Length: 209
Image (tube, rainbow, N blue to C red; front, side):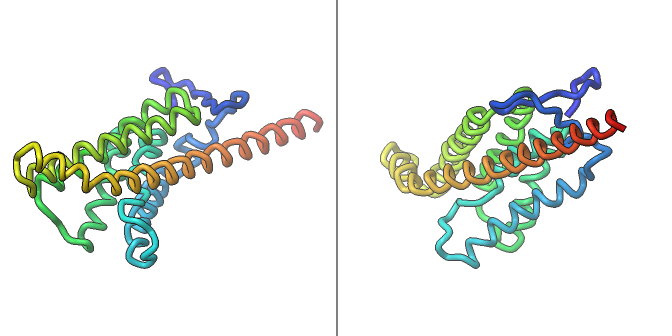
């Protein structure tokens, strides 16, 4: 992911600096394939709850893939499109709901995509966890505000009842977002480290030759 001046950035995650330019350059990866893979993962994780009843509700990869897309893609529009396309396709199957609630859900899922750009400045484990927790919390607050405004009495008691009933789902959201975000970023750093190691070995062989 280059700076405005075109120079490649080095990202750190609690280890010596590793040049990730082979991972993020447009020449070495097909952005369309990455986009499709992230959308497919998000959709599959939503459908998995129908196939595996033991998976709790709201435990899916949509926010995690949005966070990773915001980190990986240079374009904000492309990063934001990942959760939107995921939800549009999967909601065609699951069915729609009240427009105000849908707007809150879709809008809240743009937050991790935007937070991913913050991670691109410096990648570290605590920053990934923090960004995931922030996006989960905002999703809980915003979407349940829309639920209260749509389906509950507009009273203090109705407001409290709405959020109390949503608390178990908040736990599932936190867990799912953390698991998928940490999994994606962990895999990314593993591949980046292996790629850097191969590059160093190839350079050493070239020097000896």
